[in-house]
Length: 120
Image 1 (cartoon, rainbow, N blue to C red):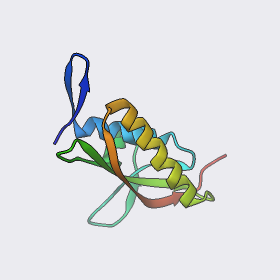
Image 2 (cartoon, rainbow, N blue to C red):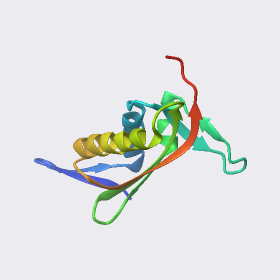
Image 3 (cartoon, rainbow, N blue to C red):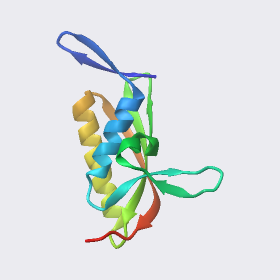
Image 4 (spheres, helix red, strand yellow):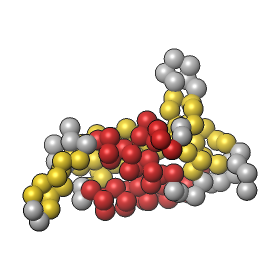
């Protein structure tokens, strides 16, 4: 299902892929996030995604009330407080997606798929 944004001159349909790309990009801007991840169902192994595949680490659904639910699969930096990073991540993604789409983000679920040591 597509989301809809009302403007002064009409209604704009927004695909779930566009929302997923935007959410993935906003997530990668957050401190402590190494990147988005995709989990192999067959192996149960998570893989760090490149910038061109950010939406594959994001699941988006839009309900009949034009509200968004987002699931983010992330890899975080070693040594950071996971809870604090996830709180910041949720706040940043919610703000940026709501601001850009004009739609309400009803729920964000964060799945930490791995931890990576990063260079300072």
